[in-house]
Image (cartoon, each protein chain N blue to C red):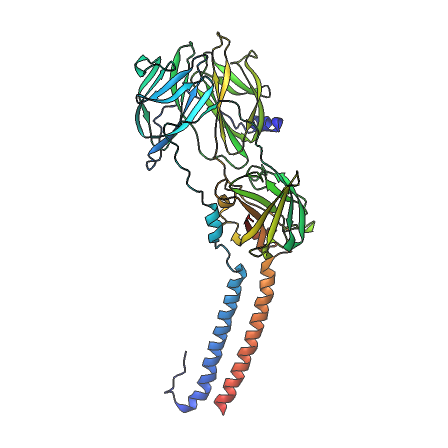
Length: 276
Length: 229
């Protein structure tokens, strides 16, 4: 399974590389939908926080490595503040004012370190379009205090030169892929190999988090389900033994024969009656 | 089409049979056309209301704003669906092995097991552990090399017929047929049968309808939907 996924990734070049920079919140969304699904991801090591949305505490004692949500948020502008647990909002350690949440989107708001190791908040728009039957979407996001990296599957780079805060994604055959992260262009392992189970019909978002210098590099995962599609078709017979048209053709032939007999009889009857 | 009653008497004799012949022939052709239309089978492409009702997801209550779910961002585990291993349908005298199958990567189609004696469970959808959604089992109606398949008699099932599905721990889940539907492959609402929400149900799928000798394909799919008994 693993090697076949890898082969397909390589052979078909089915790899979308490094969608650059921050995915802005304001991408095109369907006009009719008014609320968005918003998740919050904690990728700052050793710093539990309370999460405030528009001045109201929304997640208490949010632990590093945890994922909160999804929340249904109406489209609009939001202030997001992180405080040490129990502290009031005016003592926030990290704030984003006026974050724009469009309607009908699926968004992850990620608290993480930038490349230099400073805490920041980055919103990502999640690709929740349907995946083909039998497929799963893998999205990798660089949200760690680390230089550019390559993501390898089975030892071969598949997402190259990913930088903080960028993402790369691909739709793959569902199954297990053994992945690791190396410094870009090298074989120096930054995050050791681990099995990532890509469940069919889901998007698995893997965040590289922590700090290379602080030796706290790791991953946080978020899974979005319900993206499955039906197979194209269910071909389940090529023998013709259950053919209904031949059966019907016999009935059709019999029916026509009977009707022709009736017609002939009727004509004879009518002719006889008329000539009387 | 009625003959003209005011026509000259000497013509009547000639005219009556000619008109009658025409109307009789027209009538027989009309009847033949009706028979031909009947080839599509009764109810082809007509969805069953019962199946649609089962497939409608029940609205999930919106979570309270104060209860934001928080989960550890651990890497996902493999799916723990309970695979069916045997399918029994007494009305068809069927007792068939069930194999877990997925998608044919070349075509994107459901990968029905090559042996026509076995049927395939869609391993990406719900299994026997599920509380909702459609458990899909598809099988061959026949094959050019192997003859009649496990689902040869599927289209003849009736509402109320019993269907039993067994897992590897010999636990049996019992279903009862609620609908037998027939759709052209170009019209079948497959997303309804491969849905992972709505009431728990079993969808049995095979081929049917007219067979095209040139392409070696059946035109239609037969879908039997069974609800938990």
